[in-house]
Image (cartoon, rainbow over all chains, first blue to last red; front, top):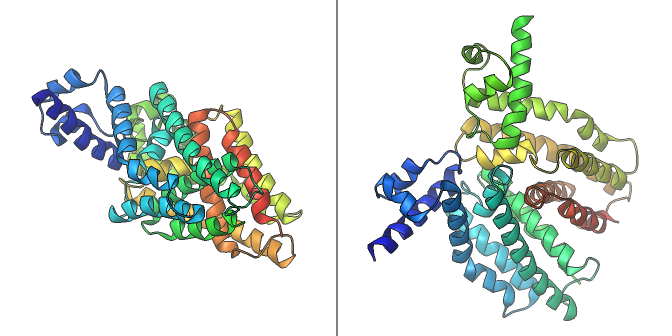
Length: 191
Length: 191
């Protein structure tokens, strides 16, 4: 039980730390201090800081399950897509737009220097794209979404557009980038 | 003359370093080693690593002048916009898609922890958005670009969409994200 608890505390506190200040800036000593556990205990739970970061990203992804579930329904597809991105944006607004998206951050920062993180980020982007593409395809079949662009391409494009909006919101500290995203989203998916 | 040369070497080699591996991971010792200058000389030229990073970002932006100039013409607006993003994409393809965009990287990594970098990144995003918006507005006036979305909103959206595509290309190490961007771009700006 104690082992599980230390593991969970490391994940929760460490995830918050690397989300806010990045991976390279967050040493193992700082991660263990944030979790209030002895520094030596870190390596009982994670083989390396890199392994910890991949686990933290998986944890972040799992926590986003309810937001992913919006895409699967119920509701009209354009409304589902809108609510999906609004829910992510609301989380970011609650945090003052500072930290952004951990998946995007890790892709940007760790992608070039960590092969396990690069692969995991690519897999999670692919899973997200698959879920959004399935939703958009259902919308195209129901005549709720235009067919000018294949669902898979549109999903890939929209997730990128969202990721870039998050990046910009991080430096503007407001929701102008999200507002532009939603304005164009409406135009883009209308039948 | 020697002073200028050391300054330029620090900028050139250091910029390449922080572009590839990030700011937090790049210590002053590593930056000076990459530039083959004594470590102590760093602070003769830059007040801090943060000041260096802002100068490196300005240098990166200045180097992108010819790519920005494509937006101002000549040529039809949809073609200018396409060539603008293709030119950036070609640079990234030449580097194996590893490093991504320094502006996006710094927004993502340094935005939450460095106020000077956050402000400078916001200014450069605004300058880029202004240039693209002016181009799109000219296209709308000439009937070459649709009017469904205001030029400023469309510019802001497209730059975000591009930034997110770059982020994804960094983990996929190929141009699928750029291909999706260009497919939707064509649909999005047609009259």
